[in-house]
Amino acid sequence: MAGVVVDPPATNADLAHQAGLAYPILSDPELRAIDAYGLRHEHAGPEGADVARSASVLIDADGVVRWTFVTTNVRVRPTPDEVIAAVDAVCAAPGRCSAPSGRL
Amino acid sequence: MRSRPALLAALGLALGVAGVVSYFPVVIHFGAWLPRVRNGAVPNWLVVVLGLALAVVALVRARRRLVPGLLVGLTAVVAGSFAAMLYVATALPVRAGPTVGTPAPDFALVDQSGTTVRLADFRGAPLLLVFYRGHW
Image (cartoon, each protein chain N blue to C red):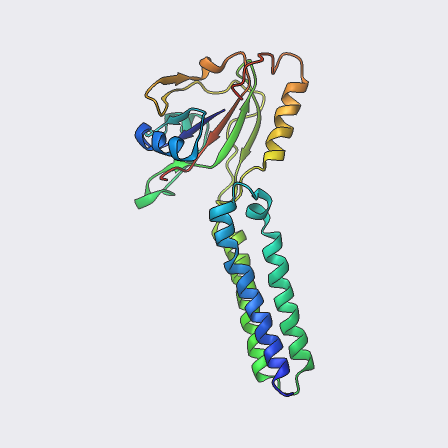
């Protein structure tokens, strides 16, 4: 698992420390990856800054997108059950969840 | 005796307000643990609807309907405002995001420890990539 956000690494380090997050939080201040994934949310940040649309993207072991949740409401996120079901569906297919690492 | 319908209607309004107001601390403090409440606000809606029902019952039973009627109206405004907040004010234009079945776009981004991380670093294992609004 990895997070992507416009905030700088120092801010993300503080957040990870405070929240006890063990996964990488990737800083994308220029919204390059956010744009590549089509997830720019224009003028939604402080002082009209662009930020990422809240979204989750599940990528299989071969680097192929297998599931997405792109919110259509600021307050709505996928539930843990929905994410687990998506992971289970991906891993049910041979080879898509092949590595036994704990990165997900 | 005459004030009972008004009191019942006032209780309905109070329940309506409580149902709405309680949504915010729940989302702020417990949203990560109560995702279904955060997404659907079902418990809050149950309280709001109960309040509206009480207010309507009070209005039906009242002989003098001005005060209960006003309270029913206020409760309906509270419920309508809650619905507008949940489903209109916070709604976003639809975005497709990346297409399922296509290669995920590559990236090279710096993590919180200053290390550059690429999509290829995760190759061989599935990856859940979560995009946050940020500005924490």
